[in-house]
Image (cartoon, rainbow, N blue to C red; front, side):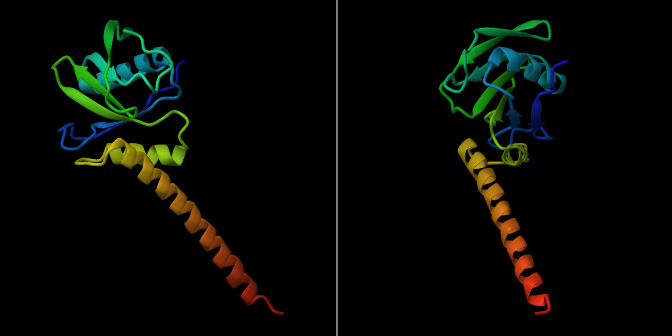
Length: 159
């Protein structure tokens, strides 16, 4: 059984921010990744008719993929490496942040949550960078706290 796609959607679907959510694929193989993502999103958005993405990030970009018993057109666009656009049956357009497959899980989860936040206005690069910086800051804070605990523990020990 295939693993569920890693997706986060903006809850109101009102398109008030830069992104309508995020997708974190497990690989750069579109033929393997797109059908499950399209199937999962179709349950929330209705039929997906077209996917638009930049070709640089992916191993190979097919002209179409089969999902939900439909052939979904894949358009090559010069957007950003870290975005994917979807056109639904009602001609609604949805823009998702694409988190690179090998991204650290903490960074990926933070970036996905930020992209799915109502009214988000940060770019893909900013979301991925902020999340990475936040992860590094958390690690530094943890190191500082453990260092302080060690120092305070040494000071309390009888000599």
